[in-house]
Length: 142
Image (cartoon, rainbow, N blue to C red; front, side, top):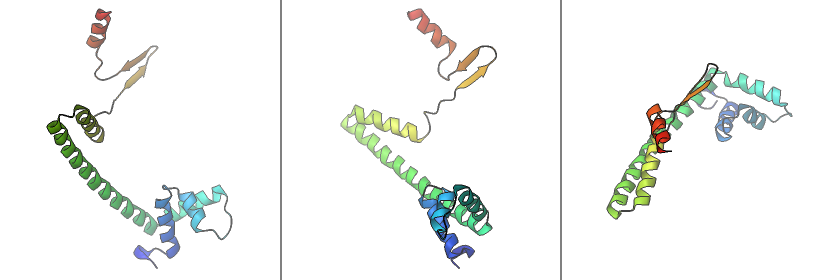
């Protein structure tokens, strides 16, 4: 038995699942190669295997580890961008400054756009930041 009550094959399955981009069918087909498997059999077998409590626990544990690594990496990147920001200001490198600000905004989710679209005989689309007053000003300019 391997860690957390997993068999060696279970452990190999979880390893393959994480290494191939989270494709359970492919992981099952790769690890259990005694006989050729149809995609349907591989999929149902993978689902059954992933329903085992010890495999669910191992997958959740690995997800939590990945989440922790990604949070740390995200914080490290933001610190590096903060340093680059101050360097760009000191060197008066406006292009670098704008690129750095752009990257920080993207990483912090400030560029998410919520579009509200409704249909009631007419199509109404509301885009935040584009109010009716903005449209009126554009019309006046023409």
